[in-house]
Image (tube, rainbow, N blue to C red; front, side):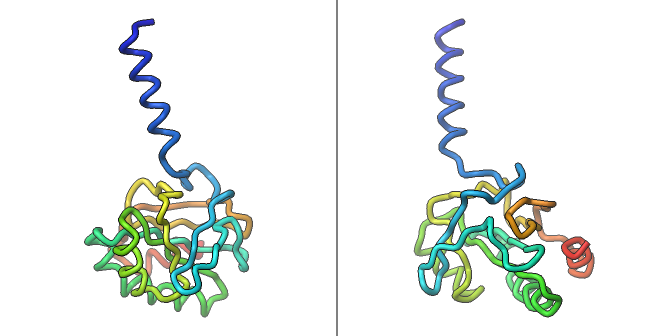
Length: 153
């Protein structure tokens, strides 16, 4: 094989290894993030309810910012229906993560080390109680009722 090909293959392997875990690949196993309030480590593989919604957002994302009120309201509705939810704020420097996470409260999780690679933001993941990703969708759906139905399905 040619030397340039081997160098390119090695560089691609290193970049892939440096990226965070891709939850769309099937699981949140092995991923723990600190919450904003207490700095307590929270495993994404653990959920106190049968299913859990995880929403990944970034401070620089305009769609995420516009969707913040919807995400907060969605969390209240899910809580009233007995479904746990969490918001992960990532893809930026820690001060920006902390500032934006305040919009979601002390239980917001900070992805300071880019442990997750959602592939795009905002990103909605529904997982089971053991962290297996059952389905996911990127972007902010235009119809909140449709989004709620998708989550609860």
